Image 1 (spheres, rainbow, N blue to C red):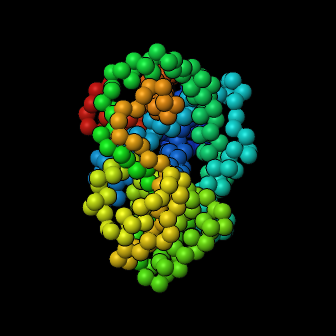
Image 2 (image 1 turned 135 degrees about the vertical axis):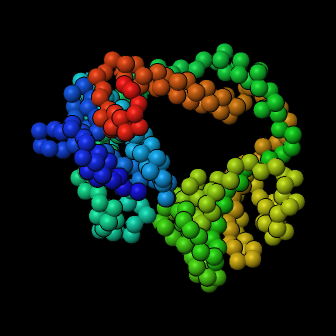
Amino acid sequence: MALACAAVVCGGSCSSLNPEGERLAASVNGERVTFADLERYEAIQLLSGRGAERHPSPEQEQLQRLTMLRELVDQRLLLQKADAQGLMAADAEVEAVIDRYRVPYRTPDEFDEHLTAEGIDPADLRVEIRRQLTVEKLLVREVSSRVKIDESAMREYYDSNLAAFTVPEDNLHLAQILVGESQVSPIPNLRNDDATGLDAARRKIRRIQDELESGEDFEELAALYSEDPASATNGGDMGFIPLSSLGEADIRLRRALIGLQPGATSGIVETDGEFRILRLLSIEPAGRQEFEDPEVQASIRELLANRLEQLLRTAFYEMERSGAEIHNHLAERIAAEYGLAN
């Protein structure tokens, strides 16, 4: 969903104009943020996979617009701080992100055509990516570098959550590459590749198997080609599955898993118009997972670090806002429309 043009947003009542006549959505320490800036920002966020309501009400559309503007104001605020510190994302970092955007498209020209169809200038896209990367560099320097989790905090979390580290039965950590004859929408893989029909599905899974046998990475192939909405984006990772739940699975799948050792991959398994290649990543045995287990400590450290970093990033944003001069013209316009007092 593209933002409505500034004239629609403001009607004829907006008086905040910059010297070039562009209507202002906000200002940040004197830096102007126009509705054209806001339109470009939202279009690029949608390109990144951030969805919006398909048929929004006027209120939902305005809320979406206010949310995006808040993000854009925060970005400009931190960019000012990053500029003062001499931080700037490098060209190579920007191009690496562009390359990831291009993955679903067969050629660079096809990607550029998609940008044109979405009303996105490739130069604007690079500017926005550089801004995002630069802000992240600032956050890493100012926030992430201060996140330290010591062993005593990890031990305290472990002792307080023993049930979470007790496995009642063996669990299989499985991954799969799935190809089916039915059409999938939306297509979950990076190549936007969907086999339609039994013969096409069989050819596709055989091609994937050939690539695996030639040494290609299972996780990468799953992300590129798997048609499973639940696991393709995770490189085929299905998580841990209790051993008892396999009793409900198709007998052909159970047979494929029998005898697989951790790290091993099955052949092609056909089940009623679907084809799978399964990989047993690991087996988590029943019983208590001890604190001394490196994987247990790594999982606790990651959990606690993520919690602390989220807290510190939120506090950092609030401190930066409290010391800034921010004027949200869009919010004022909406408030005035409904008679809210300043």
